[in-house]
Every structure is written in structure tokens, then in C-alpha cells.
Length: 383
Image 1 (tube, one colour):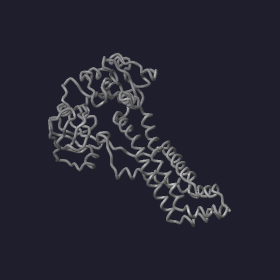
Image 2: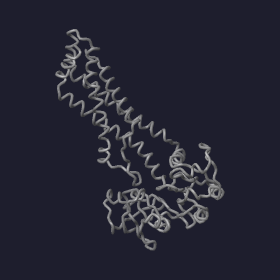
Image 3: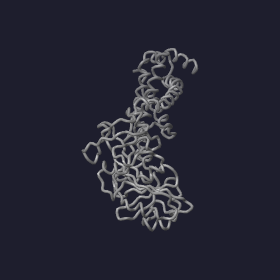
Image 4: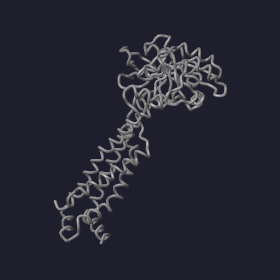
């Protein structure tokens, strides 16, 4: 009886209804995952921006600023660090958010000569109007070598004209404008004694950690009371200086969380926001389940009238639709990254990419399947 009832329901509903339901679920699922994933992606962008490229690298930021891009530290610290045993090379950088041609917000990064040589980035340090464009910026914003761009610093209203002399495709520079330290200093409007960050390349076997701790007055972070060498040997560890001259060591994720906490945010809040988005948009799935019942309420009422209970009818509908809905939800999630390519979104030049996350996928499949089920169960066949 159960199989015959399901076969009858397939005929009653018709292939057009099944296709209609599948398409609605796929589109809803894809859009839901796209929006919820953007929340997680924004956190990943911040984390990526603070992650030094390469191993055995320390980056010194200001610990008193609200963001790593607005803080400033003493440039003279660079010359002291180079004297630490095991330190191979140091250089300073100045980062500042700028508007390109009044439209696109990106990061302008000024790199000192030592850093440009180490990174094998070619730019004439004596050309005060030269800038390199990241290859992603070239692609996304239609820039090319030889173009002149007008940039507006967020710290001043003075427009500055620069000329694109080349393209750089190394991360994270592929999302940025790269120039010399002097040009970035002029754009940012800071004195010669201050920079945004100092990058330190070291040899972990030769690094004199005691000397480094004494120089920077490093404290052990309260959240992780492990000895300093453990942190320095981590991939891309970061030293964060404080206003009074002391410092402590943090990983990129710890540092990201520190800056977020200053705005009352946390990593968990990003994830919870993603789950809330899934829950809210799952209401569409509930409506979809109710709509399926409403479209064929007459035929379903006839089954009631000939003695087939509402429970059996709904159980048969769920047997038919739950596998279809689950498959459609998974297909929609799979298509979400392609939707991201249609709606290309960035934060200061960094792409908000849509990545498949197992936890988020499970949460969405369970929530939306449950919402669709409730839409069917809560509909009264006799109404």
C-alpha cells in the first residue's frame, strides 16, 4: 500500500511540480550558503591580511591601534632588530587604505628597499610616481601597465597621481598596490620616524630568543603560557608591540581576535551569524513545503475521503520529497561558489571567496531539510 501510495502521489503531483520544487530548493540553498559563507569569508580575509608570507617570519605591529593598518611603530626598532643574533634581514612597510580613481578601496603598501630586493619585486626606488598593481587588481579593475591612477588616502583629502609601472602576482601583494616606502609615507602622511610594521626574517636555529625578548620586553601571553621559543617556531608567528614599549607574541589568528575584540566582535560571532542566516533563510524552505501541499490539496483531500489517513499521506510525501530536497540542497551548496563568481565581492581589494565548510554544510542541510519537513507536516490536508 505504501509503495502504491507513493506511486500515486508522484502521478498526482506531476513532474512539473517536482521540477518546480527542486529548482526552488536549489536556488534557495545556493543563495543561503553564499550569504552565510560571506560572513566566514570576511574573517578569513582579515586573518589572511595579518598572516606573514613565508615561514620563519615575525611581523611587528602596533598593539595600541584599533586596526593593524592604522597603527604606527618606531622605525628605529628595525635597526635594533638586525643586531639580534639569528636575524637575517629586516625591513619596514607602511600600509594605508586608498581609493583608486575614487571608486575602489584597496591597500597601498610601501615596502623598504631591503624588502623589495628580498621579495624580488622590481620598482625604481627613486621614482616617486611609480606603483605596481597586483595582478588581481589588474584583472578586476581593468588596469594595465602605463595607466595613471588617482589615489585618495583615507587619512587626507589630497589626490595623488601615480603611474603603474608593472604587475606583481605574489600574495598578498596581488590584491594590493605596491610602491616604495617613501611614496607610501607621503600618501599616509606620517613622519620618517614611524612605520606601520617591521618584518623580520630569521633563522630558527640561530635566533637568540633571550636577546629578542630583552630588546622588545616580550611578555608571555596570558592565554598561552608556553615558553617563547615555541611561539617563534610556529608558522608565521607575530610580535605585537604595546604602547608602553613592551610586547607579546601571538599567532595570526590570535592577533585577528585581539583586533576584533576591540570592536566587541569575536570569531564565534562570525560563525553564529552564519548559522543565524541559514536559520532565517530556511523559512523559504518551510514555505516551499507548505506550497507543495497547497498546490495539490484537492487530490490529497480525496485520499483522505477514501479512508487513507493524513499521517500516511504525509509520511509518503516525506518519503518522496526528503531525498529530493536533500539532494537539491547539496546541489545548491555545490553551486554556491559559482554564484560567488557572478557577484564578485571584495574587502579593500581582497576577494571574499566562497569555500565549502563541512560544519556549515551539515548545519544547512539539517536546518533546511527540517524546515521543509515542517512545512509539509504543519499543513492541514482537509483545509
